[in-house]
Structure formats: structure tokens, C-alpha cells
Image (cartoon, rainbow, N blue to C red; front, side, top):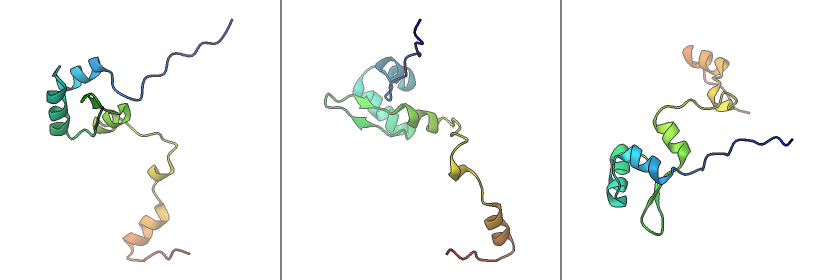
Length: 90
């Protein structure tokens, strides 16, 4: 018996997901609504908005991966700032 992984979601929102998000069926109205919402998108060659799934997750406050080094504060640097000390890079 083979291990079958569940299908990975597409990088882009599907047409039904775009309709649900924007509450519009027409591509021009969808593009305008995305602009109004501040959601980044590209326009496909047929005029449909192409929206990355990740940009929606960021826009709606999904948490970033905990493994990201940038999300870990540098406590020593913060202490230096608190006491008015500049840290030298070197």
C-alpha cells in the first residue's frame, strides 16, 4: 500500500475563492475590490486577477512560521537600545 499525500493547494486562489473573497463574479470588479482591500495581485493574460494564497494569509493575519530567524528578537540589542548604547557591527 502506498502512502498518498493529500493534494497540495494551488499557490493561486481559485476562481470560486476569488468570488468568495471579493463578492464579485466579473474580473474587472474583482480587480477593483482587491485594490480597495490592499491585496496584491497580478493580471493574467485574459484579465483575471491572480492572487497568491500566501498574500491572503498575510493580509488576514495568519501567523508566520516559528522557524523564521527574523521573528526572534535580539534581546542583547534591545537591552543596548534601552540603555542608550549603540551596538557595533563587526
